[in-house]
Image (cartoon, rainbow, N blue to C red; front, side, top):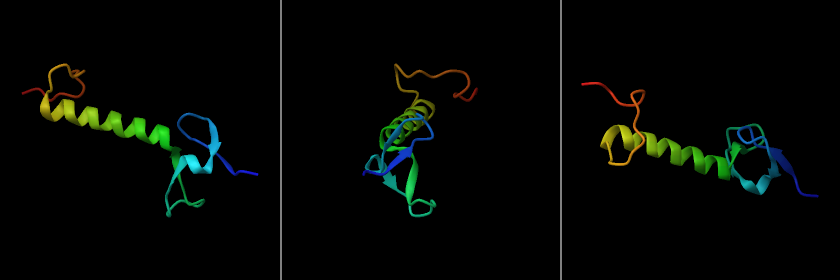
Length: 68
């Protein structure tokens, strides 16, 4: 029987092979599944890119752009 774990972000039960290893956690696995982790990393990257580069086509809003 394959071990399962609940992802804290998408609330989906997935096999433990769908989680990254995190030695500091009690079960030795990440809190979020690999798919959610990838989405979070991409969102973080895009937010940082928009704020620092002001890339054309970026979804910059007043909440993430410093007024000069």
